[in-house]
Length: 335
Image (cartoon, rainbow, N blue to C red; front, side, top):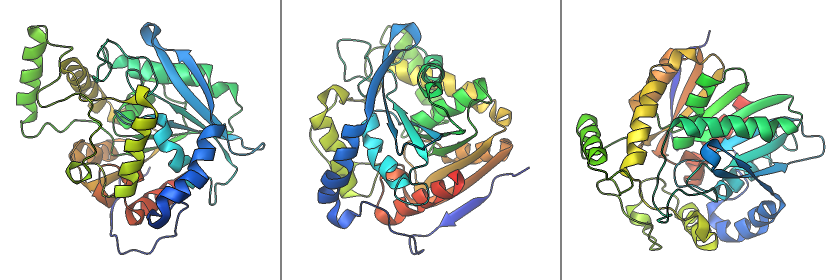
């Protein structure tokens, strides 16, 4: 039985170059990623409480018989992960996978909950995992999958852990990057933030922005961002919001924070139920998800190994040196 192994990988390590280097990123993105996005097969399904969920899939070759489901983080749209799909299909895994992606309820191109569509909202944390199960049942299983894997980031990774606990045996192995198992609430201690949210819910402010949260703003501010050190990949994400205005999303509501706090508390109590092979990739400069919970996950899950990269929260959207290490780790695990 493999217990967690923590590796600190320095930026000075030599890594193999991946497909879209920062040095020529804008041109390479137009040449390589935009055509790939056009080949994505788009579909929808009806999730919990009749919310329409947006999905995409791409078969990398006619013989592809391994399936990889990708779950984005909060506020991300599935299109942001086209570069990840492209990178995975450029090396040793070329032509092996059918890729499945979905937008979580209330974000991306999936259905929103209220007229103020730029507010992060969910009325029940459990619905996230229910949507993932429906995605598997109605979409993924329509393709023959010799093996089925899961790659999930941040909020998507927290949802993935809940899904894996509730529906064991659906996935053969999973990669979790910066999993949101307990949200960071700085500058407030977690207990204080919890009290503020509960108080806001009590006075009927569930659909209002949580303290410090704001509507979506089209103003780019790379210097103030907390999720990546890569200017070109930051610009790529901001461009996606401009090109796909229906995916724009601002800060979170009190109800969202409340549901995340309640839901992830249950998730944290069940780490030992995870029996499948897991790989956790976390960052040294983490501003969104509690790092100690990622370590705790790997201590309690049956087959979990963790890698720590010198970078920010978005390890798959980071500078080439960091991203290359993340992709290399994922490829070795999926092989």
